[in-house]
Length: 149
Image 1 (cartoon, rainbow, N blue to C red):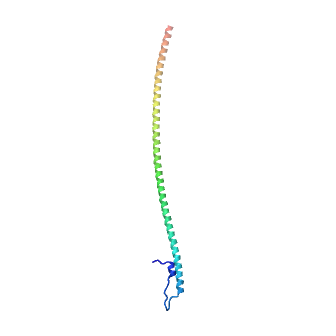
Image 2: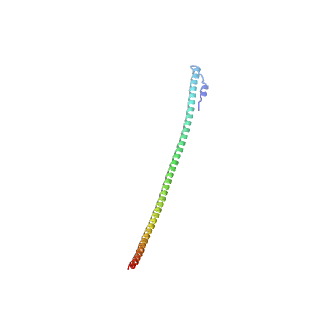
Image 3: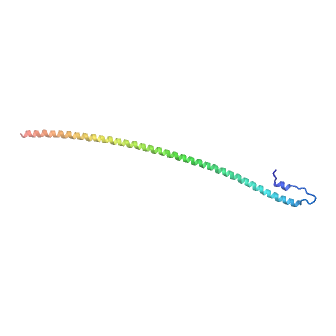
């Protein structure tokens, strides 16, 4: 059974005939006990409120910690995705550069072959021209030699 400060203040004692209790001493003592009990009840209420506030603060901090961890995990996941995408993009750029380089090399080799063919054709034409020119000179020389005779 709970006793309140009011219960203590209103408590009545039966007096004894001989050597009984002094009602003023009992009332004074009951007032002191009631005040102390009232103080303890106030303190207990305040401590309970502080406990509730501390529990609410802890719950809020726990939620904030959870949110922070989730944010960190999300940031880590995004970072990993960005790295993977950058790696894919780098690989794609390298592949495109290699294809372009191979095309340029093939074009260069094709152009070199064309130039070599042109050089061969010019040499052949030069030899043909020299041969035809020599033949023409020989013919003119023979004609001049015949005229001298």
